[in-house]
Length: 333
Image (cartoon, rainbow, N blue to C red):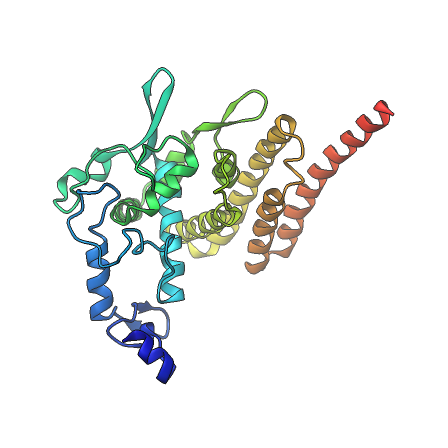
């Protein structure tokens, strides 16, 4: 029936009121259509482990309800779903809602903090094992697999984001010291236990390292650079929104830019350590895309001088190691 409309009338399902996603912006405030809401209420009850779902998939393939496996009917809703996946991953790793747990002397697995998320209190969440699983049903033991595990568990995405929003609202209502609020309190103790960085195998303590770590943890052919860059864009958006909510309008943008510049400088140190361990890291496409994404984000905010500074520091770092390689080549000659 949908194809019939598409072929003869130029209509798409997202243009039919019952299939249409919700719109909430400055000019529109429209709830989701009846079929749209019913569909997502159904698929939110589908879980990654067979036999644990509270519903039956409406699709021929068990993964087709996931935006990572099949495109959404609406591009705007698809962007929203991807944003939510990356946002849930970012906040979960930052505030410890998902953590690496030592299972045995030589085995670790990522687990969900059921207590903080109160997953056991929700009768819909029949799949209440704390261990995350990836698409092939195996336990999640690599950082990049956490993103995959989250993407196949929509109910967990929503629970993480609900938890974060409630914590942010609490901070705002209490109006306490900024250093005790969600972001700053967790930045003090933030660290990623795997993969480790550089020759000395150090833990990362910088949130802007996450795109690099996502790549470093994945030594398979399934890595897609757009995941790392998509994550970076969402981190920037989420942090900007957080600053706007927690700091007065006059200071929010400047404080946000200063914060990102500080984290950027710290992350450059991580990239340099990786270059020392794995030569040509700084000449790879990910590093170029990473700092260029940051620079363009600053340009869009109207701070072009800071955008130039982002680019110049990255180029200086690359030139430093290009010069060292040149000296090494001369010495061998």
